[in-house]
Length: 292
Image 1 (tube, rainbow, N blue to C red):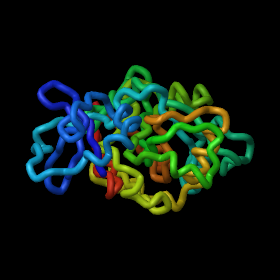
Image 2 (image 1 turned 90 degrees about the horizontal axis):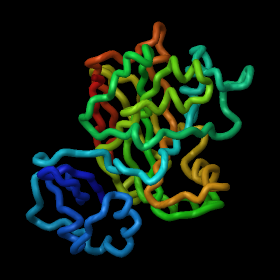
Image 3 (image 1 turned 180 degrees about the horizontal axis):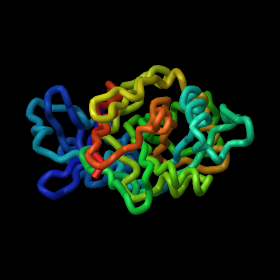
Image 4 (image 1 turned 90 degrees about the vertical axis):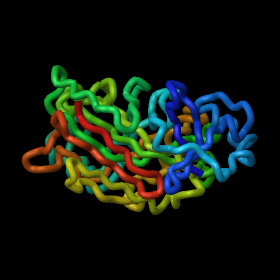
């Protein structure tokens, strides 16, 4: 099932969507009086799921504005760095990684940081250039995991039962700030640095071990990878995060980016105003944003 957070006549609404048929049905219409956001839908999903059946007469999806599927998370977005072998290597060789131990290329445990809610923007919204703060703006295509069931101390074998679904995340990064401050929060957390979307797709629609993700900048394919190539797979990330933190429904985990980011080129290909970043997970859709 595919969900969208839509702006319809200046009002936010959560909807079931059929992208092939360009149609949507509001959860309010299908489930009788639902008025919450996407996090609320995740919380109530078991009680409303049987009502969420597409009818014949939906509304035209093209008439609504797509927002980030979870534009009001209850907590920071959990993020993972250096989680593809090829990106860990390119990052190590780039000279930008000041967080690693001497000689380290592949991390021995997941590298975790967060992005605040103020970073989240939706499809089509311009990524702030922040030219007064950074001169080295970069993109990172990532598989976003949305937690559906709360839990602490979740074991790998049980982890997927806690996943509601998937979306696309662009972990926009100011490389100069990331390098200067060593810990990554500032370089990752400027306003507008987390484009997300276009949809939230339930976990049963994708194979966690075979999720493809690609990224183009101005039509040039830069990143082309698959969840098969993660260093720490999604169950491992959930086990690691939940070891002492109770994960909550609606929590978002950005799982890391593959090789092909701007800093990996010689010379680096950092983003400039007017550049268009396009990311795709075939089962989820396309997330596209221009740099302001």
